[in-house]
Image 1 (tube, rainbow, N blue to C red):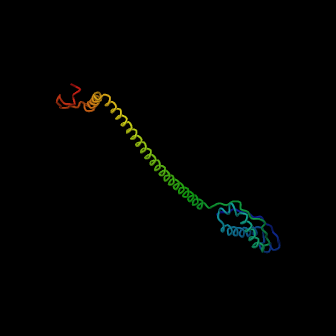
Image 2 (cartoon, rainbow, N blue to C red):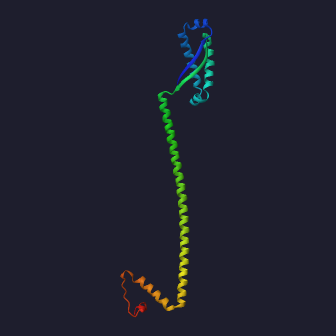
Image 3 (cartoon, rainbow, N blue to C red):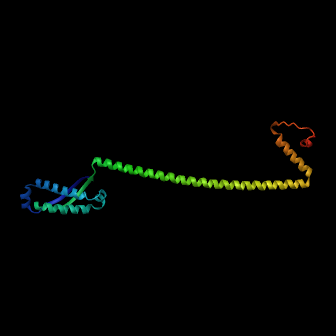
Length: 199
């Protein structure tokens, strides 16, 4: 992680400061070394999420306290340490983006798999319902056909009982219609019972 930070500081013991570091430039160098090393050490104990969101003030207080212990021997007191910006190195960013992409692809694959599974369940249920509906429809159709045939038989029986000759004539005409379609040829004698109404 690349961290851009700043510190506010002051000289609390000018004589000690002069004896140890001699100049402000040297003092700044010493502050940078100590504060940055304390900051790196503290950041190493936390995750990126904790650093950015939750624990930042705790981390900064810890860095300030530890830096003051080390910089006290130079006559320097750190008032405050703050992070201006945190970035990931370019190679880390690419790796993180790669992991994010892989995770999204894994989730998408899982969602597609769950969708196919759900589609299979729905299709199976629909096929089962279709089979039940068709079976019920066939059963109802057969029942209706049976009722129709029973009604036709009853009508024929009634017709037979009222006029048996007419009934026989109608049935013979039906037989002619069924057997003589498509120019069917028969070899029968004219005296055949089959032709009695055509004589």
